[in-house]
Length: 336
Image (cartoon, rainbow, N blue to C red):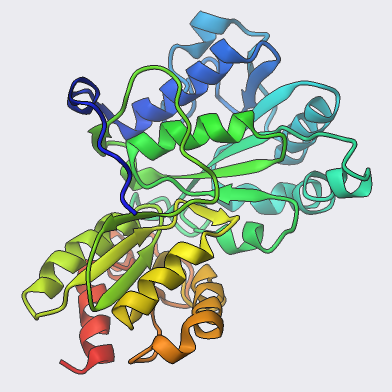
């Protein structure tokens, strides 16, 4: 269910998503003496997106480290440091660069604890940026979360709000397993309530952010906000939509999803990634396995078309899933 309201004083404090990321990392560096940040342009530039601003001045070059342009080397650094007692925060500037270091991620990071019989801890957190909408073209705009959720041994979270961005970063850095925190470019200016100090958002727990009675919309990252807009518009058509923010993709809170679908009897899954082979297919499979007898309609899915992300702003906007498309697909599904 929806989380308890913040106390009045804390609820009045608002931060942008980008500043919530900074606060989350700062809290970790203050709390954990063996934690450090490493990646391309994280120190002098504060990252290309600005969410490490001020950390070099506060913690120094031994804990906020600019690396050469070598994603394989950066990821290997994080794995080795974690295995020998540190708690690194590795910055993978764009999620698209996973291809440069996938062997380190898939065959070392994801498997090391298993192959050492659980004796090796691997507390490495990877922050990476996903999503389109900034005209950064096909090689800097992808959403590749399905690559990561397919790998046993990794945890994967995708915060939609400033509150969750800070809390999930802290949770990830306190975890003794490798965790990918997938951030979103277009959300950087989004403002929301963020308490001061350290707090955790639990990994593996979804959040019902809007209750409804006859449709469940399941989303994560920026698509949560498109889903909320769609729910408002669907109300005009007599559809009372419940919206679930997954927050955690691996582990997945299947119980919350299934309970909602059993209540509403319909499901619409939304993600920014290409629809074909996307994470939504796994969600649909689990819903039909665990709640098939409760469904009054086929499970719907909204995602990007099977195409690279266009560079042209107008084409890119047409490419990206949005509230209008969610509403249209829901009406088609229900037949109204």
